[in-house]
Length: 229
Length: 117
Image (cartoon, one colour):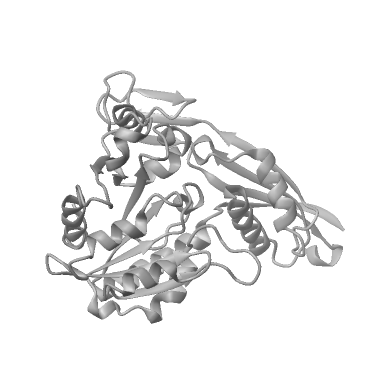
């Protein structure tokens, strides 16, 4: 018995990325653009989606479906199903414990349940977590993250990977600004340091402020995807 | 948590390349921008590798510095903190030259004499 060194030089996430590309190819074939929606737990992703889709699951003619990722339960999916939004629940828990993020394979397993032919845009609501979801592509065309003013203005500096990986940062719960020690200017300054030039929207899922702008941004995703720059 | 996810990916990669042979060491390279805490990764690796051919393997690593290049003025620099704007011209368009690696560089495996005949 002797020891041999074997050169590997492979991205540790290669296996996930390969499956993500297969998902992407399936989505492309079905003509569905995909948004990966991420945030910390409690930042308001589901409430925001409820607001965005309150008038129906079609926004500006874009037919929207949602894939809900949660460690356990179907509370979020139930909330959206009430609005008659096509929604599929994906739980990451298998027996004891559960994954803290969605990976490409989990999303792949949900594909048969998704009515892709009837959709133009699929929003994948990831598990609430500012760390792991940033590492795992699921086959999305765009990434959006929601940061709420209740979380603190230093978050871009603490989770740069997450903030750098998104092309839109939605600052939620702006109705709370008078009541919390959150300096919006400072947050935007930190955000610019971590991800210079990234787009952001200021919204309140509670009052509806800024939700129209988010709705419009989402409605443009399918067009943008089909006409690559 | 982050390190557990990464450790699982590292072990899966090593197991695939080991092709059934017992692994004695896994060497990984990770970039500064991946925010990997080495001690946590080592701890997670020890747990995740149980009952695989990597059980008991040593995890070794090197950290790759984060280097950026400004698209506008071609300035190149290394960052220690998450500040991605060009310090030369203030430009927002920067390319990450290194620091995003998350790579299994090599593994060391045990081979029986019969295998090399």
